[in-house]
Structure formats: C-alpha cells, structure tokens
Length: 311
Image 1 (cartoon, one colour):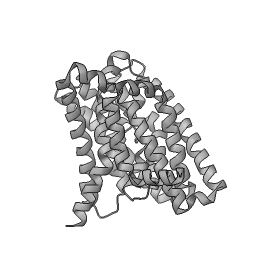
Image 2: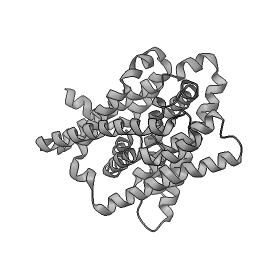
Image 3: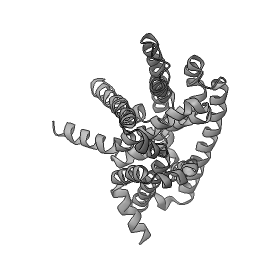
Image 4: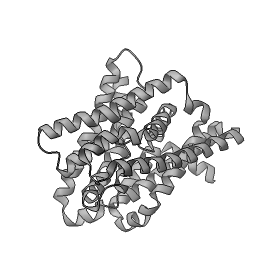
C-alpha cells in the first residue's frame, strides 16, 4: 500500500510542489514549525536522490566534469560580478532587492534541482554534478561578491566556514545514498525508482512550507510590498531559465536541461547564516517569494518542452 502511494506521488510530483507552496501560504504557523527542520529534510532529500541515481551515473566522465566546471564559472562567478557592475553603475547596489539578486546569483545550485530534472523525465546526473561541484567551489566563487558587498563585515570568512560545513553534509548524505544503492541494487528497478521519486516529491513539498515562513506575516501586514517582491522573484527566475534555454538551442554543442534549472534556481538560503539580522530580514522575504517560481519550474519547463516539441 505504501509503495503504491509513493509511486502515485512520484507521478504527481509537480503538483506536490504546488500543494507545498499553497500550504506554505495559507498555514504560516505550520511554516514556522517546519522552518528549523528544513536543513534535515534537505539532507534527507539528497540521500533519497543519491539512492535513485547511483554513483556511476552521478560521477560521469571526465569531460562532463570539465564542462560542469565551465558552467559554474560562468553562472556562479561571471554572472554575479557582471550584475554587480550593472547595479553599481545604476547606483542602486544598496537596495535590499539588489543585494538579494547578487547573492542569489553567487549561490550554488538548489538542492532539489536534480529532482526537478527527474520530474521532467531528464537525466538527474548532470544536476547532481552541478549541485556537488557548485557547493564545493562556493567558498572560492563567493569571495569576489562578498568582498565587494561585505554584508556581514567578515562575510568572506563566514562564507568559507558555512560552505565547508554544507559540503560535508552534502557529501555525507550523497555518500550514504550511494552506499545504500550499492548494497541494495534492486533499488535500481522501475517500481523502486518510482517510489523514490514519490519520496523526493513529498520531501520537496514539506521543505517549501518551511521556506515560506516569512511570507505569512507580510500577507497580513503589506500585501502591496509582497506583490512587488513576488513579481521581481518571478521575473528574475523565469528570465534566467528562459535565457539559458534560448542559448542552449543556439549553440552547436549540447547543454543539459540541468544547466537551465541551475541558472535560475539557487540555494540563496546559505547566506542567511553569515548575514546580520538587518540584511537577513528583507532577504528572507525574497527567499520566501523565490520559492514560488522555483517550485513552478518543473511545470513551466514541461509546458515549454511540449510547445517546442510541437514546432
């Protein structure tokens, strides 16, 4: 019975994400309860994803790893620095939204990005390579941005410590998942894979409820401000994903869908630990709003794929 229920959830994965968003919006008290558990749930999600993929597919070939490093250099180093120059030229770098956008661009891949690829019927291995490598390199890639904006006074040192801790957690969760898959090779069979997809969809839906904890109070206090933040989050996320897809269709070499997912879906919440409270408060609002386009990504990309397939 449980296996069948998980398989059904896996087939409805994109709609589980929508359900999580709705619960996060209408049940702020539940969001506050789940907020402290988000880190644990994310680690569990990584564990489940690693079991589903297996080590061989995740590691990939050497040339695939080099291509992944190139994409990280472009999207996680060059892009935020370009945005910094643009915002500085416009003299709006001190605006809370500007800071949020720069930090988002400097952040590594969203932890659930490989699961988004699974929901779209694509290979999750490129996504997990992007996730692990972008997080591992985060102490280095974030340094230029943190040196310029320096939101916490000792932001660079704080980011290094944070990233090392995060990398250890990711490697532990992924390593355990790979170990379980090796010990239980039957988990690679179709029904087991479908059930693991259901587990991941359920975990993603629960995680987003906790990440929406800053939205509920703003709904009651300032709806207009919330709509402004939400519009900005939607434009930035969809714009990044759509731009990457457009580039992928025009270059002579193959760019995995995981790159487009990574471009617009980043783990900006990592910066909350190193930011002072004054800077973290508006950033929490942006993070809450950003969950909406992020969790709509599988549905929007699915519709885009159907449309382009018919042209």
